[in-house]
Length: 327
Image (tube, rainbow, N blue to C red; front, side, top):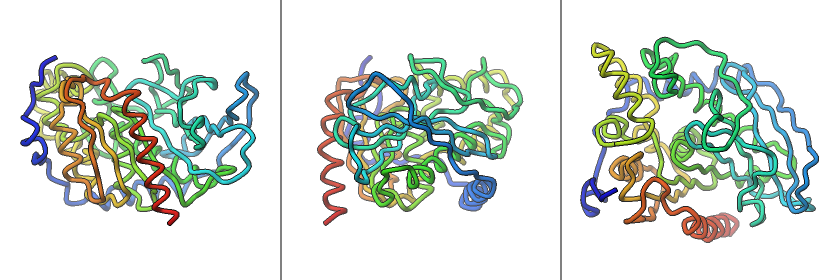
C-alpha cells in the first residue's frame, strides 16, 4: 500500500470538518446518566486457569440499558497491592477472547480489564460473550457501523461507547484496583473507543490509542479502501436519500468532536500506509485532542501500525506518566 494520504507536514496540521451537534453534551450526559441509573453491582469471580503468572477473574457488569457486558480482569499473580488498571477495548468484530489470552500488560505489573464488545466477537480469533439485545433497522451485511444509523438514539455505537464508559466505573471498584490510576487503551476500533471515553470522562490517568477508528468518519468513508468505513459507504450507495441523516448520526460518535473535552495525557500511533484508518483521520483526532498528546508515526506500515515496537514505546511512556502522577 503506498503513502496515499496527505504529506506528513499537512497531516500534522490537518483538522476535521465534522461539526459537533448542538446537543452533543446533553446527548452523552443524558445517555450515561440514564445507563448509570439502572446499573447493578458487577459480578466478579476468580477462575482457575493453567496460568501461573497471572490471576484471571470473570467479570460481568452493567452496560447500556442495564444489559450484561462481559470482561476479563487480569492481575499479576501473587500481588496484593492496589495496581493501575488498564481498561482495554477490542478491535472491530473482536471480543474479550479466552481466559489464557494474556497480553504484555499483566507481565509488566499492571491490572487489565479486557472489555467485550456487545454483539461482536466472531472475528480476529478473539471470541466474544456479550449479546446486543437491541433491534435496529436495515444495515449493511449485518455490519455494526450501519446498525441504527437513521437515529443517534438507536445507533449501535451509542450503546457500545456507553458500555465503555461504564467499564471504567467498574474498573475503579475491582479488587486490587487503584482508582486514581485508571488508563484506557485499544487498537483500531478499540483505539477510537478509548478516545471517546477520554472525552466523556475527566478522571483518567492516561490514554493510549493505536491507529484509531471513528475519527473524521466522512473522510474515512471517502479515503479507506478496506475495513468498516466501507460499510457505511456501501449502505449509502443503496440508501441514497439517507446520506444527511446518516452523517448527522455519525457526528455524535465521531472522536474529533469528543476529544476536545479530554484532559488525560494521550499517546497516539498512526501508520502512513493504513488503508483502514486513513492517516488524516488519525491526525484529525490527535490534532483536536484537548489534553497533552503525542503521536508515534510509522511511515511504512499499514493497519498493523507499530505492533510490538509500539508496545515498547507504550510501556516506557505509561511508566513515565504514572511516575509524574505520583510525584
